[in-house]
Image 1 (spheres, rainbow, N blue to C red):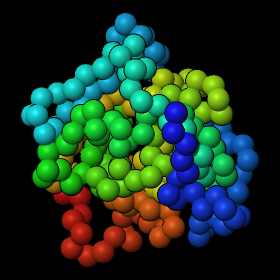
Image 2 (tube, rainbow, N blue to C red):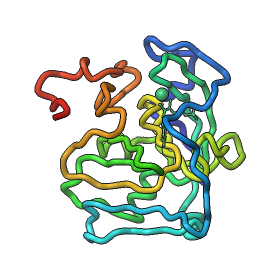
Image 3 (cartoon, protein in one colour):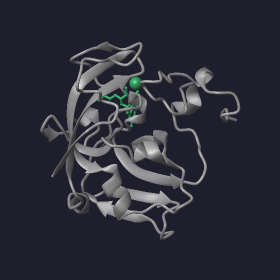
Image 4 (spheres, helix red, strand yellow):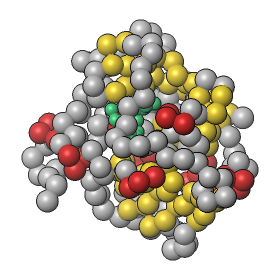
Length: 209
Ligand SMILES: Nc1nc2c(c(=O)[nH]1)N[C@H]1C(S)=C(S)[C@@H](COP(=O)(O)O)O[C@H]1N2
Ligand SMILES: [Mo]
């Protein structure tokens, strides 16, 4: 088991990103219902521009055999609260990408959840230190409403990029906006740069059409 600290966590001090306040507890936040997990129907896929051109697929049982790591990081919701020092356990994005390598042209990744929720990430943000496909939090399996059985943890990007009930990753050779990115939120959502909303994006960055 490898241990790590999220790149966005700044956990050495009490620093909180601009515009955020610390909250120790918070209610789950998501759009739509909590999906039910069925181990016999669940799978995890990596699709799109893989280097082999094929689709990778793991059953729940197979997914448990991927290398596992732990990471401690702060969580930042765009609704202006941050939860310090959350501990997560799961598969590091880099280990997943080693098991399912992207083609050299891949620049972005779309994370797909149950019911079609999605969030886009730059490949470098996806591969950053501290990014996990988490199955556990605080030493226990994720709670249903926190994304059980699998959740993306991207500490340096706002909460909406931390896709709960994760089912697939799509490697992309051009950027495309996900669910909230199409609805007025920032395409990247980096918390220390306070990239909250679409209107903050640089001109020419590529507005949604
Ligand atoms: N599948 C899915 N994942 C999601 C969401 C969602 O609506 N659907 N909401 C996001 C938002 S906006 C936030 S702030 C976090 C909240 O995570 P939490 O419920 O563990 O606090 O989940 C994110 N992941
Ligand atoms: Mo959020």
